[in-house]
Image 1: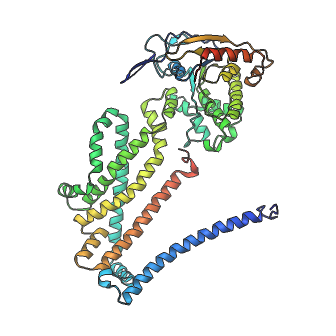
Image 2: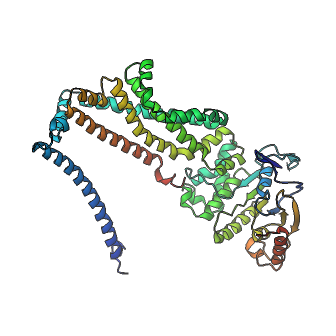
Image 3: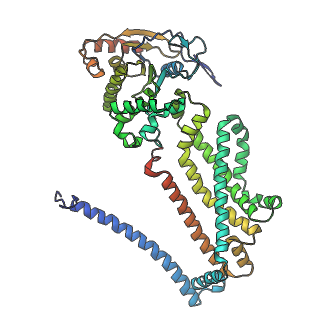
Length: 276
Length: 244
């Protein structure tokens, strides 16, 4: 057991252990890929054999054709881009506005106590019900869609972030108060920085919520975007178009989520916040 | 000093008359909930007495002042700031961060062996080093009086002994007046010139002991070996009158 490798100083036993861990990781990754490939292969196979009706279920080769068609017509990136843009604007506005409102409510305990029941009601209300109101007020266009996406994430953000502000260690606040800190300093030196992880977390949740808001918004009003393609495809019974849009949507949503995770990692680099 | 809540009012402290001399190390012991920490908060200007007043250097305390530095139970170093950014926190808040004060803090870090760690984050330091960094943060605004609110109670016993030794020597070296609140009788005797025993709530002063120990060099560790140590310990223990 004490036999150490001359070059690396790692014992054979430890090498074995590392090899095992790496093997396991590889195994998991290949199983994941296999699952994906198998799913599409089976789908294609069943359609080709006529066991399922591709008119209703579509099939992978038709999806590829549809993507190629959309690309040739020059609308693939147009629709995808519009939906992504609306989502990004929606969740950024939701997070920023929600954080600002949370700061105001933290500042005035009176206001937060007064508004508490209203926030609870707004939180439990399905925000999509507000869609028609936005359309009448703002007009049937991207602004309404963004408004819906924003409302969906706004209330959750306010409640989450405010909760984060309130649960900041009172002794940390006491510490800066012993130096004679005023409220703005308490906010900027302690409350905001220690709530960083909460805010980032709200961002993560809001990405998902905003996708819901944007797609529903597009169902209701739009003339462009992936949600529009899905509704349109459904109405004209073009399941190929519906499936294609859903597929693009899941890729886009996954990429955006990974983007937020990446931002989180680079913001909280060097494990500064791990013990928060 | 009274606290008010919906369930009524609670008198935390009553009839406290206490003077701390310049350069003196006073420790306050008492059963839990006797208002020890309230007393420190009053001295720090975080709370105000319902009756009476607190004077620092002859002037009435109306809020936190730069003459008084406060050390809490834990180090509370902010994990999103480097050690250097942490120790200049007080200077930032009091708006006195300039090249002079920056140099002073760097000097303190150098003297107390933390200069090489100034760009590290708190989680990369040991418990003792963190406590030392917290003390430097308190010292950065050059207070005349240090208030230690069970400053070592969050540490494990061995570290606690070592840190008490460490912090004591720094306080003596910087020639500060100190008030230590603790529930650890041995700690209070080993560090202080004078021990004040408080009664149960509402806290009043039960007894005051001037600690005279025969040891060559007064450090908390050597004090624990002094022959009189046991005598004081038993006296204070009896005064505390603790029943389970």
